[in-house]
Length: 384
Image 1 (cartoon, helix red, strand yellow):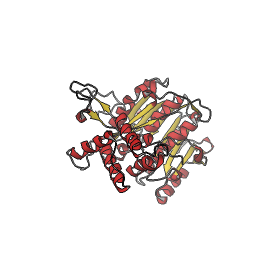
Image 2 (cartoon, helix red, strand yellow):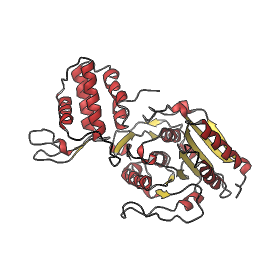
Image 3 (cartoon, rainbow, N blue to C red):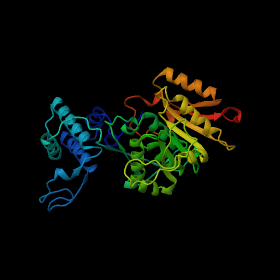
Image 4 (cartoon, rainbow, N blue to C red):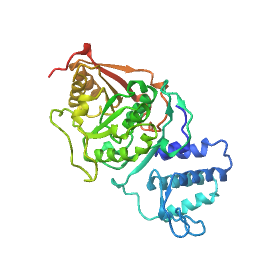
């Protein structure tokens, strides 16, 4: 797998070890310790946003000194603090002196900052990814300027107990890369996503293939965070020619889709009403889902929802799943349920050729992810 740049790793909140190694061992053209340390500090500050402060403005006091209270670090203050501490510790182990003034200022600031490492489930992390533009021909990249609208920002809550908001999951990243490689599968079509989580896959589907995407999940935390990420990336979508009104969020509980779920009153009352997911399910051409095969208790309802979708009308429909192989018994149950509904699952074995966009495969490699397309056998209607 190609190495990611230090910037890409920091943006993705990659494991600290991977980021530090990329800086200390990967920058062969920056053998001088002072230059390497300067690049490290400059990158962290370049990704931070600063509010006006004092006489200096732009997060600085008079005289050019940084007012640290006005610096908003990305992906999060906690992550950057721990990264700086790890980097400084590695310098000490290598016998290198802390020479760069910018890095010294960061180390000094975080050493004096109060507050421990007690996990806070309400503390967000904003991960971001630079998404290449595609001409639609096998996902080939088109040269593009590095402008803000080409960066996708995703809010996560790494210490939240709701897995739907905690991170970008491996299969979600893989499915996004798969759709970037194969935009023809969804280009211009109506797409519904099950278990959308933080929204990365659905937003990429809309942005790279101009698909009309309805992202669904069930919990209050996931829905509110989905709505936030959809709104936050409005300019990113618009910059790619997407009508932002065609990207929506709604509640859908697997196995329960006979009642009208028009609006779910959750979160801030100022949020727009949730779109009708039952209606979206009936009108969609393609269903996508990633990392949803993990709990045996919900597999039957999940497959029932897929079966209902595939057999809802006479149009040719398909479902595209990306699943991370974790438990063979759960996958065996999933296969039995699919067989019982006459659903054929065809796996794609060409994942080695996918673009390597998202540094999200540190817990499990992308080789553990399977991507398959589902259709009803012989175009049969599902049993009721």
